[in-house]
Image (cartoon, rainbow, N blue to C red; front, top):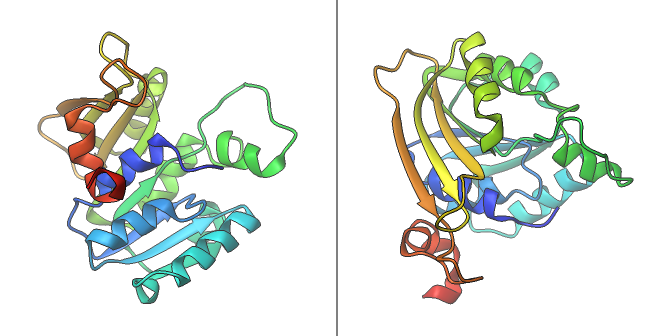
Length: 220
């Protein structure tokens, strides 16, 4: 799977959270872990069910100045949660979210994109086992799954503290949402929004550039 806007957005948001131990669920090539490592001193575990992707993440981690804080694991979240002895103050995930759509003939792509390997319910349930009491879970998902995400979070005793609605261009409906979930009850939900492009292809808004600036060296 290629690096996409979803991952860049989530990584840019996540890297601004204070954290000491981070879990990246479905790390893929390691993008989110690498982005967080760049701006924090956290120890980061990236778990990935697809063997080749996990190997790519491990190779990418070794080529960075933060290799001593980055660890790639070829394992599912379900198995990791069963055996893990660590607790995390930040968990991030760009999870597989397609339901009932046509599968690709390429199996690794199916694992990355379709939720039969990791449902929203499993993501919340196992994350709860792995988080400290005041930990934070950050997820990016399609806007049309908002109701399902909120209901699943509630069933697993998570509270939404913040939602960021992602709009591709002005005048379009939100395509993605980044939600911040807490185990402890939250008094009030904060809502924000960001528009990616101004309306012309590859002409990015000032808000998007500000958020992702440190990860786009060609803007400097």
